[in-house]
Length: 466
Image 1: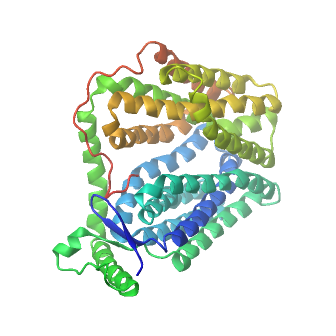
Image 2: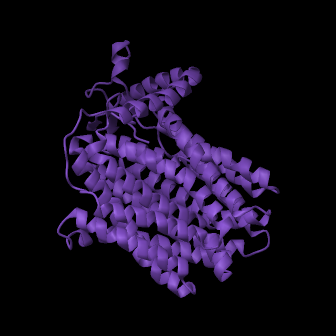
Image 3: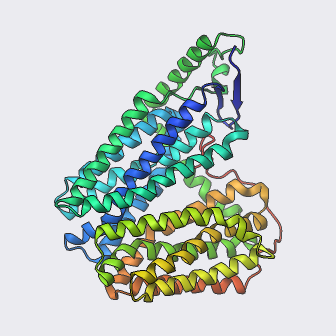
């Protein structure tokens, strides 16, 4: 008889045959890789293509910010939908809708159509989040850190090779259109893979037993057990689809009310400094990175192919930096001193990139930039948990992610406006903000904790955090 493992959740329990868990995991690895590979084909080319229609740097920034704004709005809806409709259906729908958006982008012949094409991708490009939730569903709790780590590594490898391939294709006639259409077809094929090859997560809700739905017994045969669970799941999903308007309404209002409640219950004396410093550091990076490709084109006359190589090189540095954080942590006496050191390093990296006389300096300056961002991400999270309390981890992470989403929404527009004033504008603005963040680290105690208020369950949509 097959053994079944239970994965606890606040609203759902997961009943997964342990012998079959590896199959959906491996297929989801493939899906995640294809997803980021397809996106990375196109990302280095977007700003350049928008500029071809006569758009100013400010308009390019608005174009990039539109995606971030739509992601911020739609994220809770997709999170709620994946709990209500099932991971497989929502993942399939997100991939198919994103593919439509990229195909629409490939056939766009005006700036207006390019903006319109970002709507479906902005609203539905949540495939990575749904994949992670699906993997968590089919993986025993004790194995999740390792499995999710493998998933991140596999997906990141797609982002390393994609920009190079996209840059080469873009160098040909109608290159951008070819890349966009290829990206759209990749997403459609990925949706087909999900639909035909990836099995449904075998889930059931405790509430079903309260309404008379039979919950499978461990003594049943595996086939009968799985069939009963799937039938129960279909019943729940069909109910959710019949009440789709109510589901969307709840998913919009619930996170807003929780966000307001969370803001009111935070003891800001403890964590305001970390939140603000982290927000400023992230905003400085987003402003610079959103304008990076245009800066390369304006100052060094780089081609899409060259930009693709630089993006891939940047992704490789990011992976190496991530693995180096543990080693670097041991070199400092405290997390606070490490945070201060790399806050200053970030400033010097941005200055170096802003005044670099040629591409070779860019290549060198990207090394400390990637290293500092990786270390600061870990250091700020560690300090946030230390000052806010380990028991508040999920709540603080959710609140921090909300602030980061806001930075991703406004950063590209700020960078575009700055670039319209001066080619060095994004570098000047991002460096100034980074200097402000670094200065604050020397005027506040990043590790001193006053006290902790009651825990707030923040951004937990049916057991899935988005």
